[in-house]
Image (cartoon, rainbow, N blue to C red):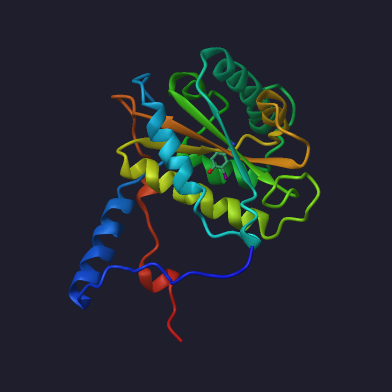
Amino acid sequence: MSGSQPFPPLPDLSEAERIARAKAAFERLKSRHSCRAFSDAPVPREVIEYAIRAAGTAPNGANHQPWHFAVIGSPDKKRAVREAAEAEERRFYGDDGEKPKASEEWLDALAPIGTNASKPFLETAPWLIACFAQRTGGIDEDGETQNYYVNESVGIACGMLIATLHEAGLATLTHTPSPMGFLRDLCGRPKIEKPLMIVVVGHPAADATVPEHALQKKPLEQIASWL
Ligand code: IYR
């Protein structure tokens, strides 16, 4: 397809309004925290549909849109994901009686977050969105055409997915059991797709907490430089 159309109009705001909007967006986004205890309260499928549509608008390499989102909502499938993920996590944390697959340094880094191999939320939360990156396929998903900047593209799309779900007043967790090959089989996805993460979606459990460690955000002066 060639040709173009005029750039769609953006809101014509005063400088003060732009600053206020940017600040408001920051304030809303900064209230997002990864949730590790979910209630079983339902979430309408339409919310997930819109969040995935939003993710599908992400900037990406050559507009090949190299992503697929497999939405898992059935109790049977969620149980299967939990069982497979926990089996990997037991190896990661060394709960299988073997030497942990994670390095000591990695386990030390996770200690303040308090994670372990137990992942009951994979069954409790109403939705698991398995996010896949397509190494090949192009816009027609022909399975052959080279895709570009795949990790960057799908990473941005997942960020937009998470931001949209947060806007909808929902809690999320980006869960990354490693390795994640089992997800491809469980979701019936082709070999050219690489599972990147599971975005767990739902309402936080009444006793959900945020670890102190997660509240420390690097200040602007540290994360930005001006040249
Ligand atoms: N996938 C493991 C380990 C884990 C790794 C990182 I890096 C985290 O930020 C959190 C967890 C787990 O889910 O427990």
